[in-house]
Image 1 (cartoon, one colour):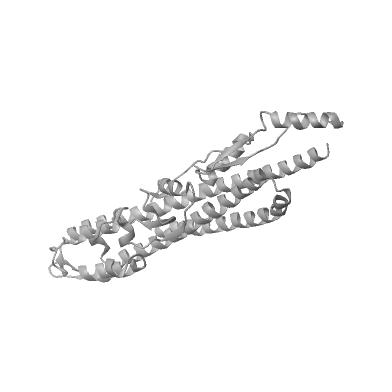
Image 2 (cartoon, one colour):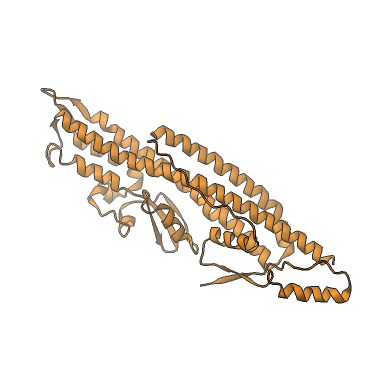
Length: 330
């Protein structure tokens, strides 16, 4: 485990102006219980590092509170939420760019290792987490749209049959579904429902919807956020890959295939059979939509928390700069 040291150097004494007492003040500074060496565990992610540093300096860090709607949201509801997330991320990015640019010169001029470490945390929180999370939500929304488009194509596969039956072109439906998701499959895995979609094998079947370089603590962070929530996270050769969970689509295939007989590509079915099939399809479609909705809401809460951490870290740097100037004038 690699460690990086932050030496806060905050005194617990009043300014002393005589040369003799200045030396004593410096000695007291190094022995201060608030001073000393604060060690950041570099195996943790920047969010955890930032929270640890802020708590060490007795700065209040609000807890994250996740709130999810119990209402079944439509695809359009979720797309509206996605656009809201994009605006929030843009505002956050604008704030980060402005604030970090203003303070970067002071960090370089100061040169102390703990100042640089705190500034690097600010960069890590935004670049490695806020920005990456925003890219994941955008990719997830696009995946949802393609799933909904493919499933919506079932209307093109239905026609009136004889004696009140419904004619269903099963093969056409499967082809439309495959075409809508072709961005996520390889040439040899277009029939992805015939393959093992477990996390151990997912990279051999499905293309990732997002990828970024791995850093300490990053894999655990994204696994906690995404695994089991409609997405799969895997680390390969020092890179993090985010995959859409295609199991709900495979479940749809396995529900539809036996209808009218597994080998029957086109035929007729009773209205009740169609209604049961449609209910099963809608259930799996809602599972995909709900996973994206939860992801967007999680991002909104995390993004707000990340922005709070950034603001607090910048304020901490400003306080340390002011202290450094005041101490230099003692």
